Image (tube, rainbow, N blue to C red; front, side):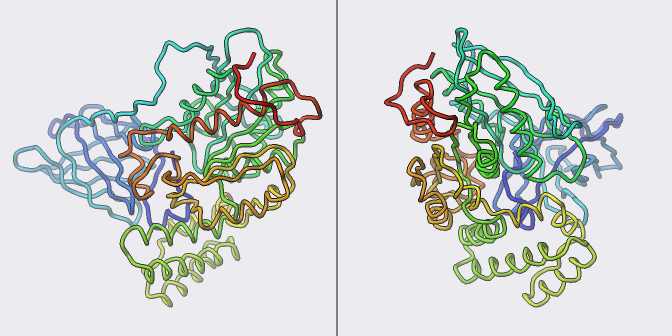
Length: 470
């Protein structure tokens, strides 16, 4: 999962990949494992070198990406199209590859040793047999004809019609399970909810898995239409109760959910997990402050970094032209005695999605909602910090008596029980979702749909305690 807002891309190195492999000579053939330190994140990587070579970044849900290797004496070069180039030196005993991963102008030290990455322990990942049905589905987005979305619909046993919920991923291309560091939080959520009688639809994002990529330049507004298409597709099914379809979004998905609920009065309820209550610009600034603070930089360094980030983002919002933006950013970094920003990063900052996100403020959509809303924040979240977003969410939802905004004290952005909340803990924690958070989500959702609606969709009275739904 590309779980960071792109603003953190100035501090962290992330990637996509799709490479073509070529036969490689004999030499450092075999399996290699290493760890890439990218800002506050440690990413496990693997190389499988031989006549056909592949590259894995399992913590980002990417496995088996083709690569090509060339060898010159003890110098080993592995090209991974769309990722970069690893250049390393094979040790005398053939046990290590010492070098760097190069991505454009950036060069990150990287060391591999022989061996296979061990699978991470993820005890909450559901295992078959399951007491419910799974259906592989696909449908078009009629508002954007180039988009076909694929996913999994889990259905309770029986004929239905069942209440349903659509799970919405956060920023960046993610699969239907929201895979990150071998965690599959959407699979865990789907399993828990379907066991309580709720149909759950989870989807591959555009360009991931079975979903088409569509034209470039998509923004959050386009992703809203994908979820709208999903809700309309569900309503056409005889086994789904059309008046009891809700949305659950994480991170950016928690912005998409209320935007669609404002536009579509048929949405029955909204769950926001780690969703911001302020603009993208303000969210990214606070992320940087929190990350630098956790990295031991001290309060002054954190505030200086946040100030620099704020000026950079203001410049990004002001102009979409990369050349003009590059000149503005050079002036800003010079004034702050900071390193210049690479041209590749400037191009990323001017992407339509990022500029749209920076200016997107969820408050108007939140203020318009009258339907039930549950917003959960992690008390140790460093990506959507509770100190910033709790008052904003409560302010925007304060006039809605059916809204609940809650902070779960020891949880991070993924709603895991965390020590510090720093992103580099995500993969170290075996827990996918804290049991208390999972129970709160399931109980609340069940309480919204445990009885047939008595009024118009989106304005149903909140029924009684949790029951198994039929």
